[in-house]
Image (cartoon, rainbow, N blue to C red; front, side):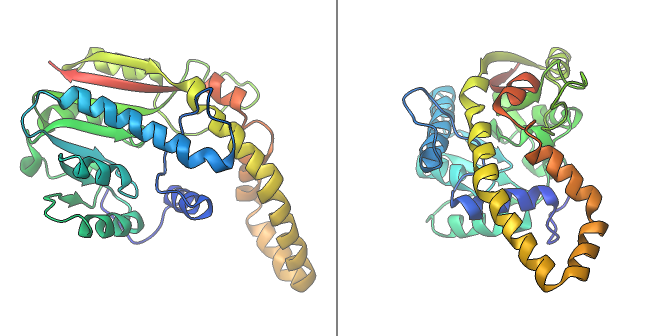
Length: 292
């Protein structure tokens, strides 16, 4: 879909995370045993995730002359910037008008870059212009938002001979829709089994498949602690103030929004959005797919 100035709820969540946590990246952090789980270490954990992706890209493209990359869903453009600074030719696609403002600011500060920013969704890329232009398609927590049929139809047209896709994202496990406590408390992600079936039927083969769930799930514990210890008390104070200042209006707004509020309470405050629930229903993976 084309970029729009109307902010979606998903985009709002990304923007709020960036603003409230003061981070450059919108992806999860990678927590290893030597890194204490704390909000103060979130940026370090995110940098480890970024470093892991950069190492993967560099190892895959080390023998390709003048490789070109397409950063799909580039977020704030931080990873895009790091790739350009390492000498790669990188284009980007991003449907978020707000985030694209940040991306353009980053690009303006990088002299002599040749980046094209496609302000649209992956599905709406101008295929004729982009046909066989890239050695690598990079999906950093953007893969989940794009229909699998679109990805496997378009990717071979975008990649050059011997091209690859690098995917770092979470998928739904076989436990999805089992009706257990916490089922559907985490939205998003393709079914992992369906993804594997699509790969088997495509012109790609998997050359790397790494399960990162145990290193990513601590982010959920950190978020849960932040919600229960920081955000909930703050929201309770605001609610108390509004009820005292404008009781009728506040009760009316809460009544009109009761269904959305109930969904939000279940999703974030019911205790089901835990690290253990995430590990049951989600599988976070680093994948490399080679075009045959």
